[in-house]
Length: 632
Image 1 (cartoon, rainbow, N blue to C red):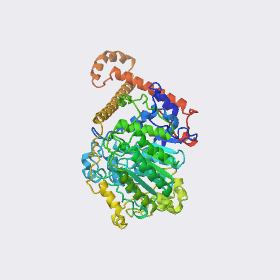
Image 2: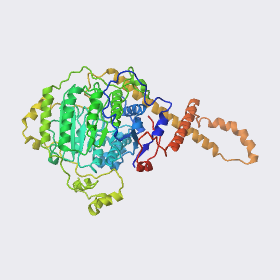
Image 3: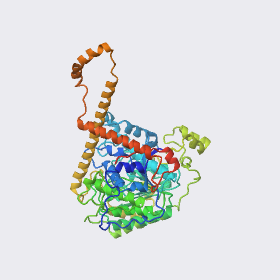
Image 4: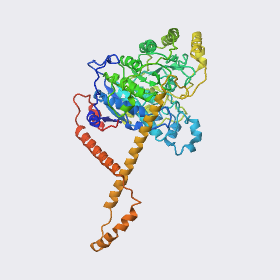
């Protein structure tokens, strides 16, 4: 496989001595209702993707997007003991070739080449690809994109091969990225790449987006096809990205397969549930997808610094629980979320929900425990924000959405969908630029899919065809429908107002202290990362010094005495050139070496065996995967 399996035994060894993985027990009443599936005798098989390197990337000081939130969430997941209910993988990072399934080669190559050191030589490209303020160039940008996309693609691949029921990649969900353009903190659209992977095996895929921002990048990618239905619940009006009108319903074959539910500020759990569940239920009935992708952007939570909704953690998680109840292959992805403590709380709770484990409301001791004070509770509560979504407004939108759904073909069929990779044959044969088909497609056209299977076994890559270069809106076609109610509803929701940048819309109800806390978490993470780099450099110097001493030529016996006499002078001359690490650094290095040796021994001793109480990987996975420790 193209991912690394992390055995439960090695994970336990990582956390032993740090904290109780299951967390302290509390006599308090739980804040949430028990998870409905926790007593299910056949719990879902969950694959969870995490790469410890994700926390090493930083958009820059003061930037709202902080990848450290993924590491915070993972620390909660591990210390709640959820590793006992899941298989944990480190996915193979996506390659340039894989990214180019959707994105242009020129754009992907730019992301691969640009760095903070050479960014001044890419002035034209920065403007062309919208890389700058919201989407800055930072150290390791391409690697960061590769990790995010690789997890989503690998999760989709494992779902398609029936190796799990639910796949989770909280580092994914970057729904604003376009084919040749960065947008809204997003560079590579891992969601589109994951859906393309699902389409190799599934005739119809449903994409649901509960981020406070419209999922414009995903909608645009599949705007002309009925193979993917997109459904987004989002704030609409003078708000980024300014898209997601009720009348944006798709064009061509994709007409009526884009569903948008524009919302106003302050929507509560109750109001959200009254629209989310009926709409998703109707879509499931009419569209009958065979797989679902749920983008769980947590900026729809109450108090998010860039959000404007008023959902509690439980209200947000209810969407996950409801979608899970349909029993379809489910890919759970992250997305927005800019109040770090609440992001990690929500996604950890939803990980437990996916795995069928009710989490203690008292947060267990973990790497970031100090930041969860003063209450140390797994909870995000609503505030006193006014709900501007009246019952009449929500009903009006819901009626129009239902009317659109009634005009869709019931469970649209995919002609000839008999082979797992028949999507390759279904897509248009013409290349976007009218160029010759590449070698892989020629093989597919001439010799059938079996040649592709033999030449490219178990790959995550599909071909570019249907989902490229189209007009997003098709207003002329939509206007001919003449549904006069649509315009009136859109006027009420703020259609046509000025588009703003994603970072402009600050939440007035957000706690100002959260900014300071987030910056401290980020600064501490950067400091730890820098300390590790310095420690690694000190270790390298020490190793080089030892090697130099070992490789010194041995003089003849008659030359030993003069050499010894000259030793003090030589030592004095060499001192400035070779800097010995401080005692504390040396001690830390020794401890680090010992810990690494112990971890290696643990892996070697535990890799062939598995905890009988834990879910085990398939025989193929065990043979193809490597057991290893994981950083929190």
